[in-house]
Length: 174
Image 1: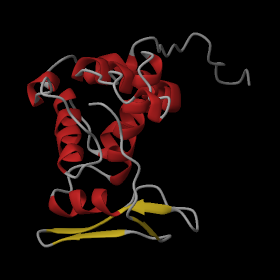
Image 2: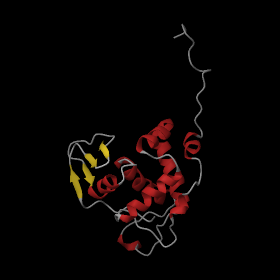
Image 3: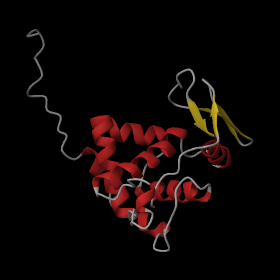
Image 4: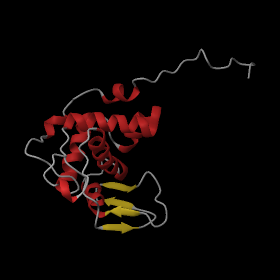
């Protein structure tokens, strides 16, 4: 995955409903602020297969950019058209987890589940669906198997967090 193309065909709305013939209407899990834009290509992906939310697809695009920045492969401008901006499936997965923990902290697992993301394979599904609508680009090296059972997503998202009862005030000591 090289880069996330900007959405040029965006819709402006404050309430987005995605209807599918075999499922109830799906609303964006986060209300859009007035004047916010929505990418019509992602809406089509959700209409075709509503397993993942709009926010999940947007997060994958953000994770690609985040990972490129972190690895020093971000596009600087038109001058570096020959530069390699590619990130592998494993690199993207690690970058996505890092970004999720940075943005959502201990709630990263919960957010991913709310969005329909349960395994690393789900990232692969979304990446290749985004490629199919020209939101991401790919190289000949990219393969959906790059995302297959790479690691336990729940475990990676919860590493470093520990809840203890020892620090909690006891009843009557508050």
